[in-house]
Image 1 (cartoon, helix red, strand yellow):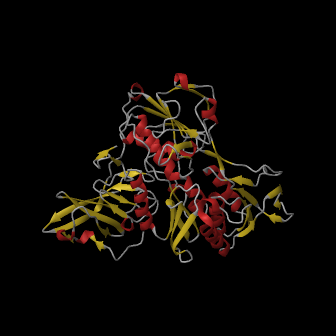
Image 2: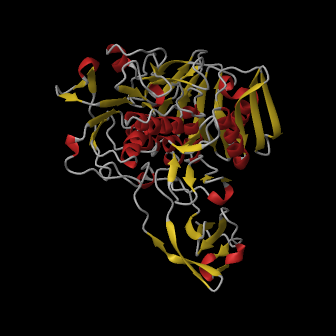
Image 3: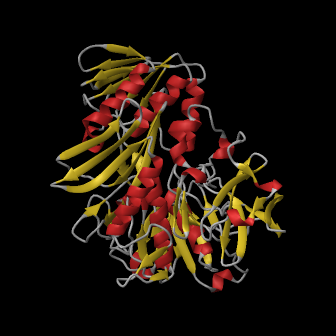
Length: 524
């Protein structure tokens, strides 16, 4: 990270009088941004770089006892540096502090951060057994939270993926465009092995036996559990046309998928992307950045208009078009013949490979076949219980009550899945903590990046404040005068403040604490 010369070098000393009780002072130690905090006669210093992907906390929101990252809305405790809410799992790095002669000096030597989890004893099997099915966002977050909350029993995780949990959001963005390598994909510095989680990869759970708290693996084994979390995620939809199963036709869901695409891209000139989903359009930007000529075939004239509205939809496609992405609006593929994608109007597109991004389907068959209640997802209550009180569900598959029991939604957002995993873990331990969660996601296409909070399944008004062309705007989605969601471009701090307002509706502050009706704050 380049040195920010506008920040005070705290290693040279800072007058003690410069510190305001409870307010962080942002400076640097050499090239590293650091904040100093004075609280109740104690002075601490922590890294001012988010432990998730390095967001600058000095540009974030200081909100009572919390500091929130402007990029992906991770939340940290100011006093301890502890990560309180995903997508961050690791505490902020602590620095040494010396107070002498009215001056505060921050040591260049960083202190080793204490792990945010408890390791079980070898008698863990005597303390109970929790099983997690799925090694994605919700599954990892739940396992991490169980240890952070001092669960010392066994944790078994079964994943159909071939890799330990990784940050799937990066696959279509920084990993596909080449900015990040494998070393940046790990969701946290604490590998599951360090959390003493028994992880089995490429393992499928074939059936559940809820009446006996048991599951059956595809290899014939039977496993007993005390509590079980379903976090089976989604599967990409496939094209139902001739040639769709060809060797140069890909979907992008897993790291293995992405590596196959990167291998094809290494000797490709042209690619066709079918579908106007986030996966399809983010991949279009990333592949174009690699110098590949990309054509996008999409049945709509305004992709994602139902989710984002006409103005933001058009801004995304205009941004992509300006960088050379070729759109074929209102078209569908009819068949794929080798290196040609034939469209429904008779046109053909040359493609060294084709990427299909037409959405995903939640993996709910395991729950359905076990007699667990499902609708468009696995039905859960506000505690993430399924219809079986020993089985919980989180992530893409969870159909959960949002704002009230009358509104049930299912989302496919990374941070939502992680925070649901954290909430499910607390409830598996008996906290009975209701899920009060405001959906949040982000996306980027070249120099266009936006954040979205809330949930607007339908709306009858979109208000744009600011200038979309200058990448400086707030879009408000309202239904009958009630604001349901907000998207921001170039206004990260405003987005954090607006998110806080959404949480206030739920009686929640968006960190690790909730408020009782009388306003008294309690630990969850």
